[in-house]
Image 1 (tube, rainbow, N blue to C red):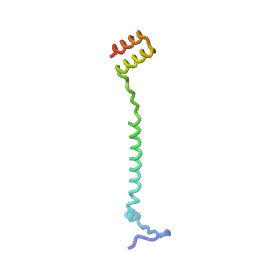
Image 2 (spheres, rainbow, N blue to C red; image 1 turned 60 degrees about the vertical axis):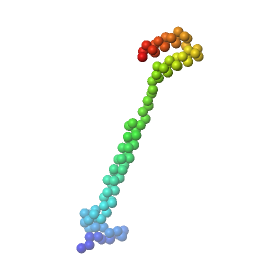
Image 3 (cartoon, helix red, strand yellow; image 1 turned 45 degrees about the vertical axis):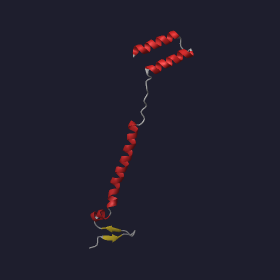
Length: 94
């Protein structure tokens, strides 16, 4: 008994839908494969966004702050007494 019958487009179709599914397993796998591929693409894009753009600000060290104070004093931006006060404040807080 022949289950395949040519239709108007010239392709054969099965009388029984179960037989038709067995004919082309690639069509049956296309949607799940496409779904997994799209989910993987979207989730990998989210992973980049979750941990991607963190801004890290570094606090200047005490040594760097003392050097900046010295430069300010040398350039005349602060007086010697202001320099001594800021230096004592920096060294006292650490």
